[in-house]
Image 1: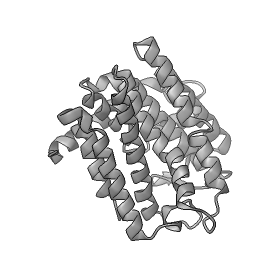
Image 2: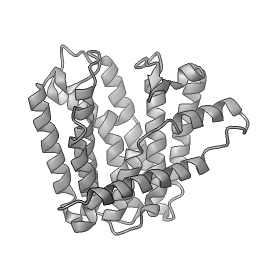
Image 3: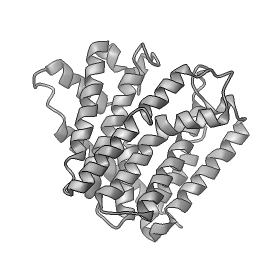
Length: 281
């Protein structure tokens, strides 16, 4: 499938603008009481994120023949959960990072208590967004899917295993199992829940889920190639760089195959998958 780079750039830019407006609308004003919490929410949400997860959601909506706007509630939910995970991961008791996206992490800019409460507030609003889908059955499905994504079988369980992992005593299966839950889970939710929001079912939802899984795992392996912190769970603890590159390319090929069922309408998802390879350092 030929993807027009300019058209994809335009779609990505429009997606970022669209979801930023929705995020601005759903968050309380920084001047609203309690101001310190609301300042922190806006500080972390509008810190320069690329909005990849909402863009995937909008791309999945287009693949299913719908307007991107129909996936807005789940796109916003995915971005709020992603931001929550960054805030909590940066805490001293977790990954202990003082900087995020070129600025002080939330617990540095404010304090740890405010950062924890801000992350909790973002998570609560993410579930509230799922209730804004017009179809009640879609609300239930998206909410349940988000719970699985975030909970012990998803991001939280992945973080627990990541903190407990020992780089010198791990396997490819263990590393990818952590990556699938910590990173790929939210990409899976973004694509799959957009399908739910736009009325897809059966094979089409399964294909979006599988696309998000392959895309998310490839994305995290690319991130491993960028991250030189020996403490982090990384594919480079179990594979050589060349083997990791081959794994990335195989996963991206798989992602493109998964959405072939949508034909030309899957162009955004295919284009986004191809662009991951361009991120390899």
